Image 1 (cartoon, rainbow, N blue to C red):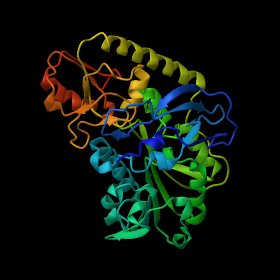
Image 2: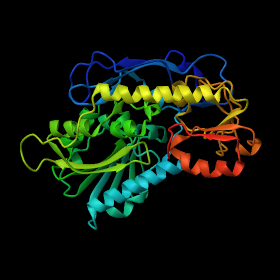
Image 3: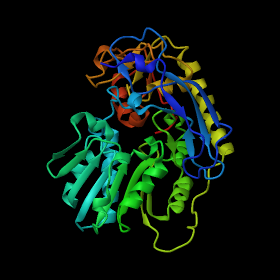
Image 4: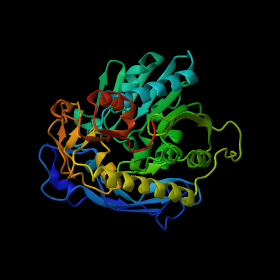
Length: 400
């Protein structure tokens, strides 16, 4: 049961500087008034307007890093209402399988002394890599309700924030790897977290990170991917800037364009002294705004078309539907519902939208307009929707 009251007057704090270069932040690049919380499902139609907080997006002119201003209390975002698990998301599993291949290509056939995962969630990565290391440790505060430290096979679980954990006992191990998938973007102070890891682990430690990139967001025109849970929006340039400031060097980078326009990166302590040359162009606020304005124009045109139709359905009750509705400029009240085949979501609502989630078996779509609302699953959903033969199928991002 979701505790509704925590989403009425949402606890938060404001940032005052760029988390990468530490320059002060001044004029916001985007103003996002009454911005919705995403990914919170409830059993009844919301009776009042809750789950909103004013937000601002800043793109640093100095280092090209993107970040949001207001940081919501993690207990609100990742408490009992947090619903994402890698093992339950087909696209997330595929993305992490690709990340595992990236890691294996770097490690080769050697057996590591220890693998430490930051933000281990449901242990999908650690289970997949358990034959690559003598020991494995997973760290994630969302697992704290299972009680402190415990083991699953050879995997040790620590349900706490990294800031509270001393890793110095592992500093003398020769073959250490730190892995982190889709966690860096959620951290309030990513630079301090990296500093802690670098200070407490050995100089030969290999780091493998996977996170959404600002470059991919712009390329794919996916501004609906700006939301409260992602505090940071690293560009290739700003991440390289961050590594250089910490005396680390990038050793490999690969694009994962099919999942959040993300990056696979590996890095380690610099082998030579001096500032590392930047290989990536910095994104300017002007370039960012140009693409954003084109995105909002397109979303407005789509919404004008949709709302002129008689029967409208969404397909895919993904976490990001409230963000999509916000960018369309509607609360979806004219829609018949959001179709989804996950039984755990059937008949539920989003905390801030009056539209119900229904199983696709309950709908006759032949005279309907259907909007694919789980954008990252568009290819798979499109194949299924064609079999239902709706009057039209609407893609929000314009391409697959």
